[in-house]
Image 1: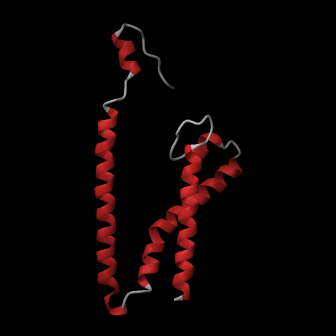
Image 2: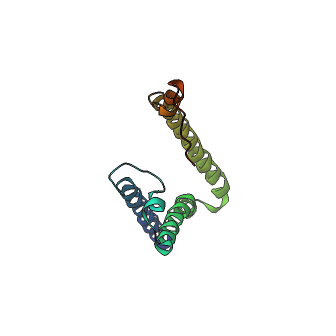
Image 3: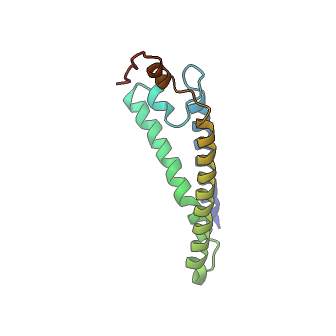
Length: 131
C-alpha cells in the first residue's frame, strides 16, 4: 500500500510537471501560442535544453508506465493479466478515438487556413522558398 501511495504521488508530480511544461510552452517568446517543442526555439544553451528534454522524457515515461504500476498493486495475482489487458484495450481505444476526433477537428480547421504561397503563384508572383 505504501508503494502504491508513493507511485501515485510520483505520477501526480510528473503529471503536474507536464502540465506546467505545456503551459510554459504556450507562453514562450513573443506571446504567440507555440505548443509542443517551444523550448527548442526558446532555449539556446544546450545544457538547459537537455534538462528540458530529460524532464519531458520523465513525464512521457510516467504517462506510459505508472498507471500500470499503480493498477498492478490492486489486482488479484491470478487475474492480473486479464485485467491489465482490459485496461490497456480501454486506454488505447480512448486514445485512438480521441486522436481521431482531433484529426477531424484539425482537418476542419485547416479549411480556414489561407495559403499565401498559392495566392502569390496564382497572381504571377514567384513564390519564395523556405530553405
